Image (cartoon, rainbow, N blue to C red; front, side, top):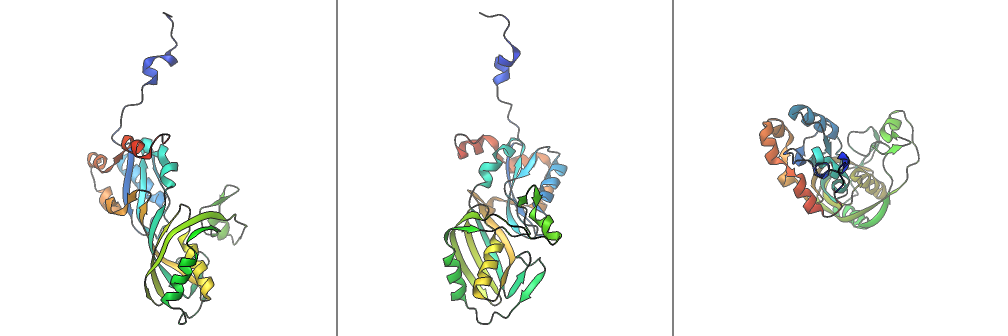
Amino acid sequence: MPQNIPTRFSTNATRPPPADPFDGVLLVDKPSGPTSHDLVAAIRRTFRIDKVGHGGTLDPNATGLLIILLGRGTRLSGQIMGGDKTYEGVMRMGRTTNSQDIDGETVEEKLCTGVDAEQIQAQMDARLGDSFQTPPMVSAVKINGVPLYKLARKGQVVERAPRFVHLYRFRLLRYEAPLATFEVLCSKGTYVRTLCHDIGQSLGCGACLDALRRTTSGSFTLTDAIPFDDLLKLPKDQLASRLIPYQKLLTALGPGAA
């Protein structure tokens, strides 16, 4: 038997790190106002956990399911962000903004009296399936390392490469002019506000996103999420009980997830 075995080949060196109760995924119901990064920073600060991330950004005024990744759970960011998403939203007909949502500067306003529910649903049906979508200038997409929204603040408009997206379901739930309430099930990377903007342009009256709430992301659902304000009130030992453990996630995601 060889006597001088290098430490890097010893049995102990190959053992996986011990399980940490704060390795995993936390499902949070995001309120309107703070950014996704704000929630990550608050959780890191409140519970004194070094590695905290999220599995898919929500715009500041959007609400709903935000997947928070803790500890080794951050390794699963790519797989978790890749899931399809379901949103419930409200589209405001007759208003066009520079950000394609209600928070942007109004570019144009028109009457939408000639628009009815059947016309809106027809536009939604026309967008089902595969398509290419150009990201809005007010977005976090980076060009040469610079987020588009920073260029937009300077009044710059640059060419953006269209992105492949897929809509599985897009249906009108209610229309009380000028507000159209809808549900959409889409692939990752879909800009719902761009869908609203494009529908408004097609109907000739303009439109923007008025409100948005994410209800599912992959296999995760909003019904299992804890409101953010309630989360911050939890003692740290109770936080662990709200987590989906890292090892359970590995099993669910299958081989190659780690």
